[in-house]
Length: 138
Image 1 (cartoon, one colour):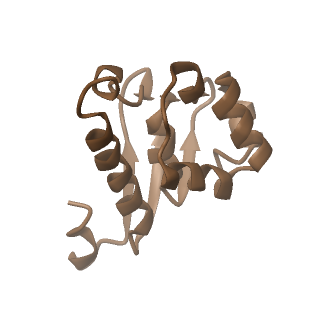
Image 2 (cartoon, rainbow, N blue to C red):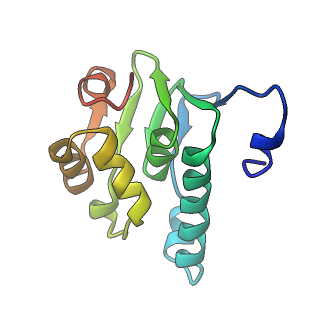
């Protein structure tokens, strides 16, 4: 769908959102520890890269918590909006997960390097105010 979207006449924006207490809990950890880990990670990275490259505006509506790989899905969008009470947690180091290059690049480009390091290496959960302060939400 993302590959075909630019050819659709009249489409000027894409909104990525979800319902429920969490926007997304990120990767299926069983997949990441299985034999298809690299394949699944590459497929997810490809979706985020396609989303980032879209020639139309993209908006991520975070109506809940966002964890792990889903944080990159949000960062691939041009704009991220959220609600009070949402939390973010990025914990590949705590889980022993190797993160893919384009996702790391998005983190460094969109939020400060020191904040990206802290989120990745410490894996602490941050609240809405902190998400705003570091530039994750706009």
